[in-house]
Image 1 (tube, rainbow, N blue to C red):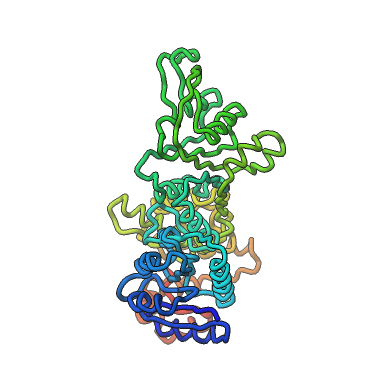
Image 2 (tube, one colour; image 1 turned 120 degrees about the vertical axis):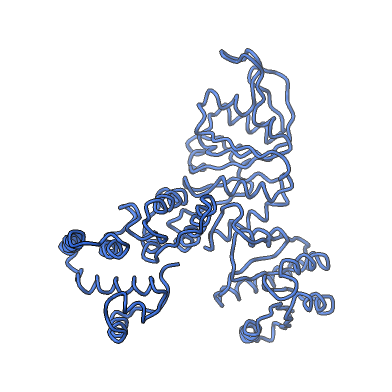
Length: 481
């Protein structure tokens, strides 16, 4: 029988686990705090511990640290409703088996726990264990709650105690350098240099000199000896971005560094020994480049020790709201003011866009919207035209009017013409109901759900407002964050 210890101070969670794992194959024991759990572990000798990150008394992370001291092989799964990148990274770094976000899907929870219990059984026969990590804010700017990003956080944590070469792949703008910096920050080399080199931005005739340096007189213009990035980065970490654009000659030198840790400066013949961790990134399909003989196969395998694929933003729209809030907070801090808010209609428009430029494009859009927004809230009207989908454009007109641009008969007349022009383009659009519904939604947003104030703002009675809320099936929720 497998022994499962749950450490969580919420009675509802304990009750749920008793129902979910009511099985003759599993013996479930519960503890309400990290302190209680630590007392139980030596006596119970559980096969698996699953616990909350945030509890009264010592935190789940501190409990995990102490569990590692008691039994370094005991598998621990952490769970939390606050899935920041730093929490996931620290959890993996400290040696957790996995990291779950609340609320969790029951079938997936069972699958993960059954997998962990199988691992626990296997570990009793063959001792092999892979650690985990954690912390709080999005300190390094890697933001996401999606499953794809949680996998990235875990891989960063698993790389923390290793000097293994990593290859980060993904489209332009997905944040490959941010991931490289996070790997460096959590590694044992974080007190040594970190240097980033964009291999595509440096002319090929200069790239070799940039990386390995050159001797005086090595070529025209080489008036003095130059120390290259690899020498500058001794005992540190070098990030080679867009490595797929590297010339065959430079690829050969990189391969030699990875194999032997030695190279010569351009124009020199004296081998130089360095201790450098290499993290590479590319937006190209290196497997195809290898097949086409454009990239060395042996170098590819040297680089591809641990692969971290970054999903494009269009494949993780659930992260857009988190990213937007992060960018708004970052902008507010830089400008010394409270962060702007953003309307849900604007968020929905962002979530529908395909984002060819990925996270970098999203940040640029939010920066632009923050500048052009007339008030403290960013509205769809503040977005570039390509972001706002045609089906939401009637919403934009209404929000423009309410946001302060509709004073005077001329402006209202222009808005009416705009609405009917959109109505002709979209036969399904019923102008009056669409406008009425959006005005009511905005009034509820503006008054934070206060029906008395919203009715006054609209110039109708509270009873009429209630009927309209029911008619248009408008849920009473705050749509401005």
